[in-house]
Image 1 (tube, rainbow, N blue to C red):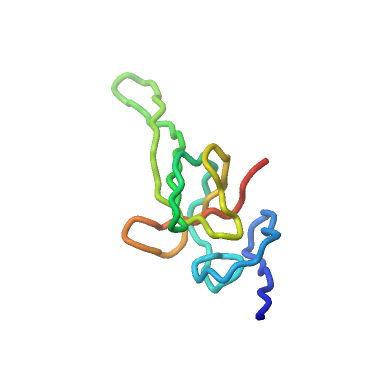
Image 2 (cartoon, rainbow, N blue to C red):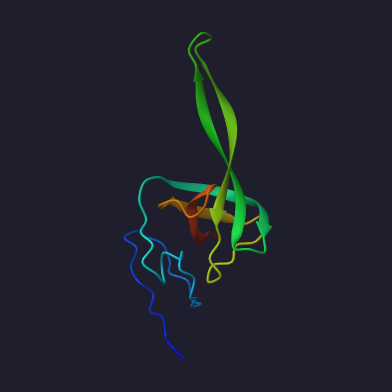
Length: 111
């Protein structure tokens, strides 16, 4: 059996203990991390290595000189070595497009 080594992705996150053979895993394949890094929470998981996450952002209303909170949802790739579940706080990072709607991958589950 082939052993996969965990590679350094260039961020200060803990590498997963499990190994996987997923071609879109940033730790065990050639997938590169680029762009935004966001802390969010998982609201839905799918059996096909996908998850839906939400995060809040601040939007400015110039007319009223105030700010409001807005919530955004993203589809992300959930590698088998990380396997985030519903309710987990996770860190996601932007990658190249994985599918039509997935441009982010989960890189860490926070404790």
